[in-house]
Image 1 (tube, rainbow, N blue to C red):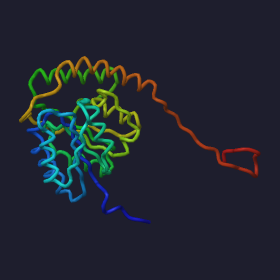
Image 2 (tube, rainbow, N blue to C red):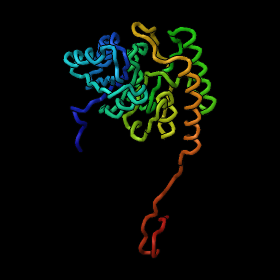
Image 3 (tube, helix red, strand yellow):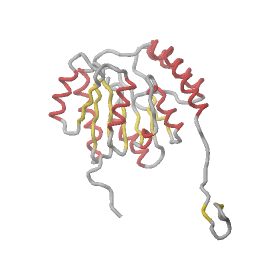
Image 4 (cartoon, rainbow, N blue to C red):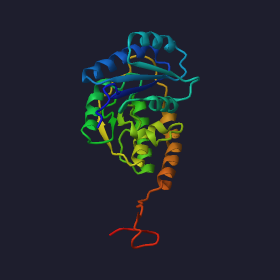
Length: 258
């Protein structure tokens, strides 16, 4: 039996980015510092969501310096869900980590979450920003949005929209993301039958750039999207099936052997 491919990529790190030019270089550096010591082959996938602030030039420079870096560029600004979906589909790693490009997610947390999957404790480890370093209005709006999500989807996830996650690549195969659905990724993965655990993670204040999402995104759009997810939960097809074994000696057709 053939052994594992020594050239196989163990971990893909995916980060959607929109107008985060000042954060890209330190983000890539921090990711390398976090995952290179693991001693496994990895790749970094940055997805430029139609940035207009000079991000493409920064990314071209980084590609010359960092061999593990891959850059995907959306033709036009298509939103965080589209950018994340593009990165997830392009990932070649056995495991896939995601994080936001604003550097509020700490890449140093990736090895800890990855270890949980490697130990087969779960199929997806999703971060929980238990101590958020954000303005009070942002914290309140996110808390309300998470409450709405949990109430309508009957979940108990504290922080569904946290960008920091690690999951098996197989979890992505059956997913179909629609606009806004990145906020429900843990629930969607659970719907596919995978094991999901929530893990408190470090959260940092934004060092550069400006936030792209506010109260309207977190509360009112969350309500609309929750209704869609609730519909999916109710309409999800669940069944068990067995194929009969052929018993030509005792039956003319198909039979179940005892």
